[in-house]
Length: 155
Image 1 (cartoon, rainbow, N blue to C red):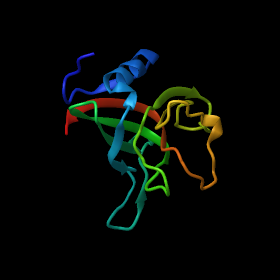
Image 2 (image 1 turned 45 degrees about the vertical axis):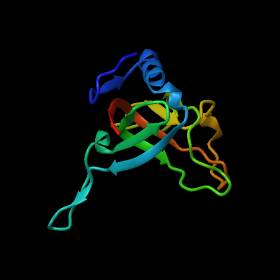
Image 3 (image 1 turned 90 degrees about the vertical axis):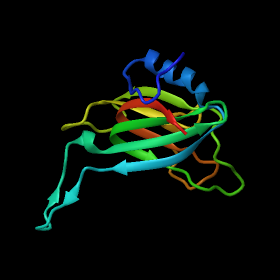
């Protein structure tokens, strides 16, 4: 599937998930290059704390792959969870495959947040019910957010 550089693609359906996985080879032989988080919160000059809507909690992740001439940028809005794995003892962090799935009602959503979330993980057989709170290795990097869009960018 040929994609235009710098053109954002919303992920709303299973076909959209299939498109991103097809475009970036299922994340095979990929790696995370950078991560940028913004909460939308701030303290003003009077030291008052300001809170924005849930969708201002954003996360951008840039990937490189040995099989693509372009980088891939994922933009998550409404970030709910981020589990980011850095250096691991006796394990490397290259990605061999990835999982992207929609889930309903896995997190509390009583007020302003939608019940449906999207989950990206650096392992194809990632199971949301298997999230381990222990500090074990190899560990998974995963993101839970309300929405996802993506684009190809220059390396």
